[in-house]
Length: 267
Image 1 (cartoon, rainbow, N blue to C red):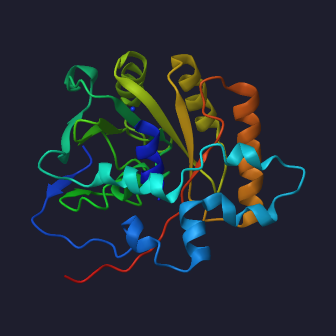
Image 2 (cartoon, rainbow, N blue to C red):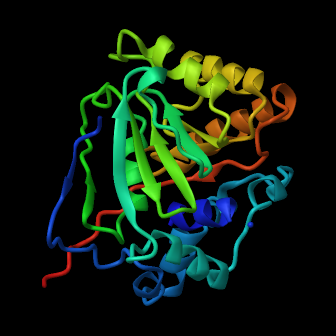
C-alpha cells in the first residue's frame, strides 16, 4: 500500500489509454485489504514487520519505522487517488526535452531508478483506484523512453522518468538531469532501488546526483519479495549505512514495496 504512504507524505511517453470501464483489483482499496487475516494486513500495510523476527537484536529498528502512519491516516490519504469531477486524475503529457516539459503550478514528485526496477509498475499501483487511467508496464528494461506526467487533481503531479543503466535512452542525461536540476516545483524525488540485489554502481551515481540537487528525496526499495529474508536484510542494512554516512537530503527511512498478485473483480 505504498501509494497511501506517498499521499500522506505529500499532504499540507509510457502509453496510456482512457477506457470507459475496467475491472479493479479485489484488494485495491484499503477497506477491502483490511478484511484479510490480521497477519496478512500487517505485512501489507507495514512490510518491515515481516522482517523484524530475522533482524539481529543489536540493529536499531527505529530507523525503519520513523514514518509509521495509522490505518486511519492511510484511509484519508487514499482519497487523493480517487478521481472525481472536482479532483481529476489523468495522464497529462510526455516530454523528451526540457523545452517540451509543461509549465505546471502544482508540486511535482518524480520517480527515478534503474531500468526495470519497477517505476511504471509502482505508478500503475498508485492509480489502481482510477482504472480510467492505465499505465503500460513491461518486463523489458528501458521501456519508458520519455518523461511522463500524470496529474493528481490540483494536489500534485507524478513524473515517471526513463530508467538509467541497461537500455536507457541515448539522451537520458540530457533529458533527466536538466529536469532534476532546474524544475522549481519539484518537491520530492523517489529513488527506486531493487531490494533483491541492493545498491548498484548506477544507483550510487543517482544518489550522488540527488545529493547535489539538495532537493529532499526518499529511497523506495522494490522487489522485496524476490529474494530471501537474509539477503534482503543485508541489502537494507548496507543501504541504511550509506544513507546515514553519505547523505544529507535523503529521508532516513526507506519505503519497502512488494508485488502482490491479486484476483480481479468481476463486474
